[in-house]
Image (cartoon, rainbow, N blue to C red; front, top):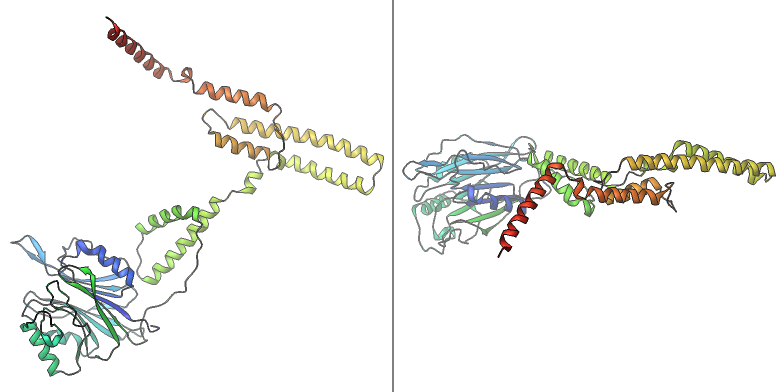
Length: 432
């Protein structure tokens, strides 16, 4: 485990459905491994799943008279932690308990987790202790146990649950160790919520009350340092560079992917999300760049005939430079005229193709872009045979397209009718 502690949380949540977002947020911020929640009051139809966690539940109790649910337990365990539920026969008066085994990398039971809610004065701790079955165990939940020997100095009172728990601890030395301190875990100043270690009180630990998780109880957060034989696998971090201008697009693509994604383990999720990020970054950046080679094929000076005669001209020019005779100069001049003729035909062909792709609905930005493509990178002057004439024709065409005469006949008729009606009403209003 590389000395990474097991991070745990217990909280009497008093209604999970309305506080599920708080649980999710806290689990993400603190990288929790296990969460034990009591009094969830969830309905079987409620969606209380949290991504990345296995969920074990004990159903709430339906109250026909009050038409609502009460009690209910939920135990969340990270997907990459091997765990299964323990069948047990815990019986209590409106009390509930659940237990799971957590395994090491060799498939042996590493520790047991017991999540419990006990009603006031109904604690039968011997039954809970039997769930540990001799293994190191974490008992977490609302025991409703008050006693000054348990560190509950604020209430100044004790109850039967507290007395039973103290009696068990005194009769079974070094079997049970209460990890959380004397801080109150209830709004009334009591300490009914506990994190306890059973059968291995020497494990290194740290616990604290979380006052940001509040129902009528506070959450209790803990870290337990387990042996190095456990299961959390680390992944090497991969650095990915996202260009600023593509961040929003990539974020939207990842959100769309995540909406329809499910994973069976954290390792699978980590692998998949990195693969998706790499794929979407590469695709977005590649599509965001101009495809220079494809645009070059549309320039007149990249025409096959132009390139072929350019190569011939360079070859003859090289011959003349090596042997500057009058005959070679004559051949070079004749080839120069041929080059001009071929390029003129290529320009006309490419400009004709360009003009055919234009109409009165083409945006000016698209017109400008296509002109640059047809002209080529180093066009120093207009290359159309008569660019002024053609530009005037296009301007006239666009002006006509935006005029009244170019509107559909039905629209013009409706406008004319409205104009007559409007003029008639104005005349009536202006009569003395």
